[in-house]
Length: 89
Image (cartoon, rainbow, N blue to C red):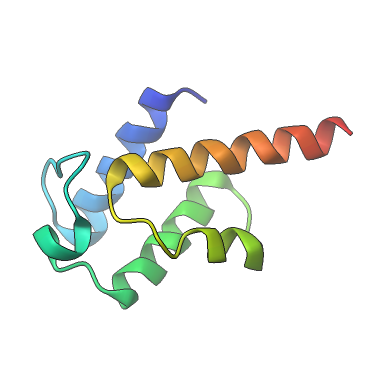
């Protein structure tokens, strides 16, 4: 999965689930869009659907400091990479 595909899907999630059109990639979600903890939980559920599997407790903890769409994309790329390495072992 490419970075571009991840970005496109995350933007689709924001449009579909949070009614945020074309969010800025580096906008602080909390400040700019009043994104709260309930929204964050909903986003994690959408990320699980996107990845086709549940996030581990550790993966969920890693999401706690995410503030921007770019950080969300980085986070998903790390999860995909970590899972590929785990499968390869």
